[in-house]
Image 1 (spheres, rainbow, N blue to C red):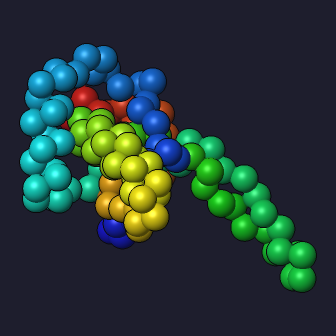
Image 2: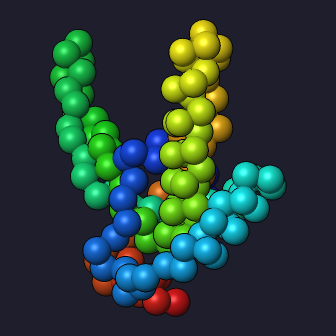
Image 3: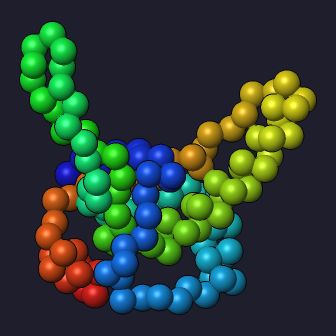
Length: 126
């Protein structure tokens, strides 16, 4: 099982997820824990959209993922997204001060799995 770091902006919650509400206070607490300890468990995603890219020299076609859908770990994703927003605001100030920006929370650790809608829904409710 390979873990990949995927940019937050390429990932979105699944419309299949039966869980629709999230406790904001609990998300803030989780974000605080992740900020201190790091993300201890990757989220699970599946490819939502991909596109074919042709190598002009060989003619080989490669399928490249363009976006991902969360299967498991939406709370962790939302918590890291809060940290990304905070980091983005701090980066604006750093850039204005000609300092190097931080990119600690621009991506999240993911396990990418191929799953049908039924398999993804089953994983979400398990």
